[in-house]
Length: 65
Image 1 (cartoon, rainbow, N blue to C red):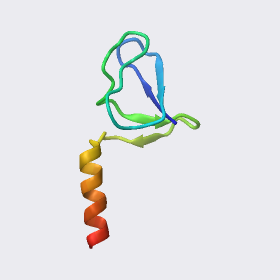
Image 2: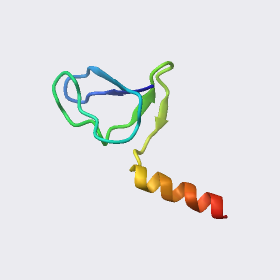
Image 3: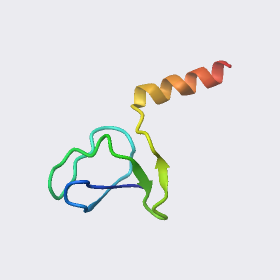
Image 4: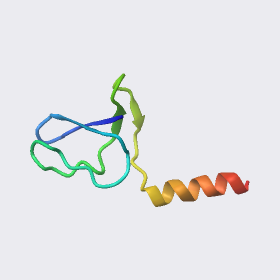
């Protein structure tokens, strides 16, 4: 489970996936490029949000190496 905090209304938003469009349920602000946190311990998981396509590319390159 992932958590993002809206920079406009400061309300938390939760999701089961880190990829795709992420819109604040309260004010409808786009949170897609905001960092996300582990919902259970609120630790930053990734300071930079990477698109799914880039993650797959990095994964494929690590298997080949």
